[in-house]
Length: 86
Length: 154
Image (tube, rainbow over all chains, first blue to last red; front, side, top):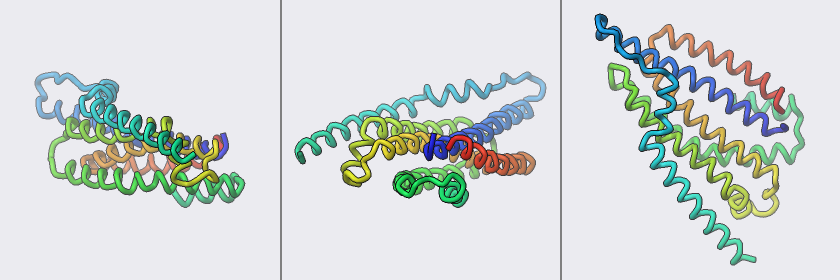
């Protein structure tokens, strides 16, 4: 893969670290909830559903759409600039 | 980690000087995004998470959604206007296919960097000492595996 492989290795590294931290965050939350109500069996939040909720939330969708729109505008502006320059 | 990367590029994998230059160029460009957007966000998130006593997954979700959306936008940016951006900002000399490909990869890295930064900020603000110790050990293992993986992938 060449030098790009280094970047992808970094991506993998960050993914592992981030996921382990997030996994512990969800686990801690579940434990805390269970300790607060020891008699009732608290419905646990699964890690996967939490990850899914990140990509379906309003903030993510809104900001991502805004970002995509900004990129499109920038692309047209750059194309226009390069055409004018030629 | 950064120093390890330099050692890998210069000594271990022995890439050509032009490839090293392209790597440095793109790394410093994305480093600006990390320094001016993600680092302040991580610091602010750490302060917010340290302030509340109970675990707060809802706040974490909001922070993560915001930074992940920025990371996602960076990926879209690199795909749509990466080549033109390099051409305009750094002129024809750097506007090569490999440089654009490197920018694509670095923007994907940006997304994971954002994900890791906020998750770690939460864990370090909230986790009990035994979990923190485990996470620090995991980081050590990760650093070693990173060197191996880099060698394998490069």
